[in-house]
Length: 205
Image (cartoon, rainbow, N blue to C red):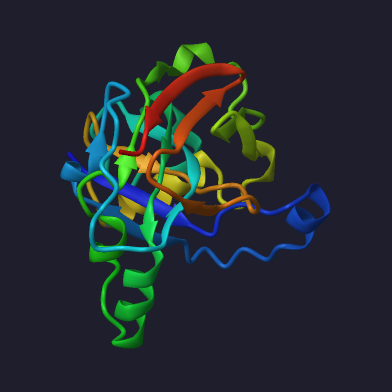
């Protein structure tokens, strides 16, 4: 099972989307399967960071094996959608960037990817306008809509499948809204929803 993710993939508004030039060079990174936290279990705040940053994201689940998938066929490879948090240990990331090192320690640690149950793709009639949001301690901090995505689901699948054979159960984090990311603290309660349905609900402990 692979866990892939795309960075810097949302804009603030439709005008910005119109003016954004896509060069096809998507920023892709991976997280190990051990970074996932499922079943709304509480997440242990990592001891090695003092600056843990949250990003809420929609995640697409792959339902069948594919390689060099065309954009026209890409949707048929999606079996479901979930909502998740992509955590970054920002101070660790800054350290590794100084040495031009990989992001693994900053984004792939145990607990770096709490994820909700997957909703079947049949629940979504229009992939281009899915609403999702994140509340922390009851306050909305991020709201997103796939209408503001730079590289859409089809483009992400087509691009990643050039490099990786996508297999059933693989997960792809598709990016966070362009505003609202911030620092998380021990004791915070995180709740993420898709189309108003609460799917992810856990506490940092």
